[in-house]
Image (cartoon, rainbow, N blue to C red; front, side, top):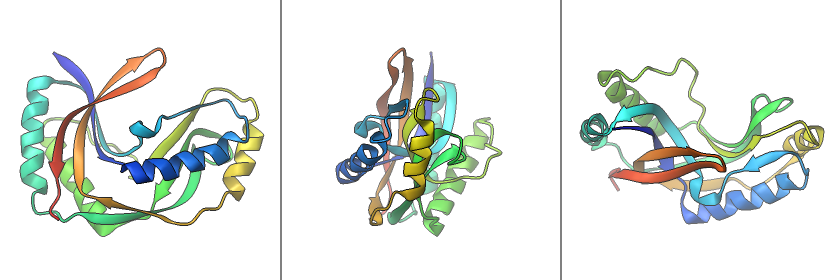
Amino acid sequence: MKIRCFIALPASPALQQEFSQLQLKLKASEASVRWERPEKFHITLKFLGDIEESRLSSLTSSLNASVQEIQSFTLSFRSVGGFPSSEQPRIVWVGADDHPTLATLHQHVEEVCSTFDVKKDDRMFHPHVTLGRIKGTHNIHRLTEVLKNITFEPLDFRCAEIRTMRSELLPTGSNYTLMSAIPLQP
């Protein structure tokens, strides 16, 4: 059976709370946005799409072997913005600084996935957590102003594991289920 999956760095409960506070500031714009629930906050390392469960199991085993020497690391989140741009956002995000260990981890994930014929993403990797998805144009100009002017203290997060997650699309949004967790070295 095929399941829709992705590989991610999960946000800690403390970081979920901080991001929820950022969402509150952004919600003040009253823009038409479907805001993500805090328990769904994560950095996507790789979207796998629909994959056979048996292949996912093999991929996870290979991924575990590939990342076993990678040390846990700390990321700092310092910016908010929108994709494709803050002036015309479709996605509202909080962005993490680049980190050499994150780049190495992402490279390992891409290499393992390529051996399972998962297509490489041609877009440059921008580590971020999706806070919300734009649903319409109502008050979008107010949201873009908030995005330009919002300030917050840097938020640090210890990345200690990667997860494979199942994503089920529902009329109310997506629902995530943990498939596996792979610890990084302490």
